[in-house]
Length: 244
Image (tube, rainbow, N blue to C red):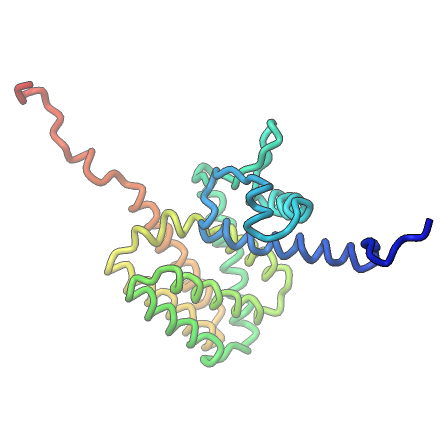
C-alpha cells in the first residue's frame, strides 16, 4: 500500500534533528546543573524535563547519558536519575589537579606572548565591578570567560581542554562554598589576585603568571576553608552551672 501524503515520512534528516534536540537539552541541562538551577541530589523526572525543555523523552534520555558521562548526573539502581551530589571528600585531590593544570596553562599562555590588555581588561573590569557590588554570578562569569580567553591563547589544545573541564567541575563548588563566604576584604583580594594574573599574562612573564595563578587559587581555597569553619558552636559555654 502506498503511503499517503499526510503520513509522516522518516527522512535522513530525522536523526540529525534528534541529535540536535539531545545536544540542545544537554547544553541547557548542563548549564542549569552548573549554575545550581537544578540542585545537587535533586530527582530528574523525564516527563517533567521533557515539558520544561519542550522536547520528547528520547532527547532527555540521550542528554542524561551525556551528562552522566561527565559526572553531572547519577543513575540509581531503581532506574531513576538525580543531579550528581556535590561532596568535598576529594576536594584536595581536585585542587591539586586544578592548580597543576592552571599553572601549566598560565606558563604556556604567557610564553606565547600573544595576550594583549584589550583581550583581558574587559573581563577584569566586569569582574571588579560585579564582585564589588555583590553581583557574584556576573563576577564569576567574567572570571570564567577571562580564563577561557587565556586557554584559547595558550596554543596547547591538550592543556586547554583539560583545564576547561576542570574549571567547569569547579563551578558548583565555588557557587556553594566560595562566593557565599566572600567578605569585603576578600573582594578586594579577589580583584588584586586576578589583576596579578592579567598583568603577568600581558607582560608575557611565565614565572609571574605561574605564581599569580597559584596564589589566586590558594586564596579561593582559604575562603572556602574559612566558610566551613564553625561560626559560634566552639565559642559557646556549655557548662552545667545554669539552673534548669
